[in-house]
Amino acid sequence: MTGAYYDKNGNIIDFYAIFNVPYGAGEEEIKSAFRTLIKRYHPDLSQSHSEQNAEKIEVIIRGYHLLIDEDARRDYDRALFQSRDPRNGAFPVIPKKRIKYSASLAELLRARLNPRRMKRRDILFNIGQDVEIFITPLEAKRGAIAFVDLPSRMYCPLCMGEKSDCYICQGTGRISSSSQLEVRIPPHVDDSTFIDVDLLNIRPDRFTSFAVRHLRIKITVVQKEGGI
Image (cartoon, rainbow, N blue to C red; front, side):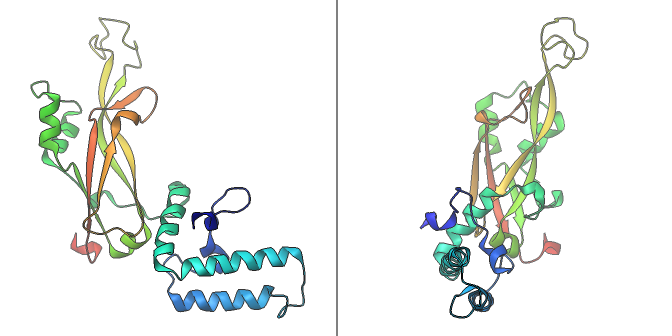
């Protein structure tokens, strides 16, 4: 079924844009848009007869069958969500006040480094559920973006670890800092959703690494933002 999502060039088709309906459009709204498009392009109803119109009809029919099928639409929404650049404003960004950090992770963020007296296995054990993100029912349906602050370590920009007497890093070659992790919350999530992130292969940039190896994020759906 996923082949129905893409055009000849391998790009995912935005059927919501073609039907000119919002992301959360209901079945009747989709049917109405479908009827309008069919009247515009169908050779029996339109004065225009061309190969291009025939291709448009094929895409319109494909989109209609996909959008009115609840299971197919759920899979399509996730694929469309993953294909979009969150910076273009296509999805809502979760406010910082709706991101709750565990006590252990909050401590690491405040310290901007791993407490030297704590072993790595103790940190991971104590963190457990690192972050809880509160989202509205609409965001749960449509998907959203959250930017989570995490403790990080970056190479010393002054000596790059090559000077033992460096007054910035004191010869360690590293500086404690914090960096943001972009978390994509896919469409159609609920309170049973957990997102596990392996941070070993993710770097904020080539000079920086996160100070924690794994992140467990719990998604909590609330009825309204004011109640968070």
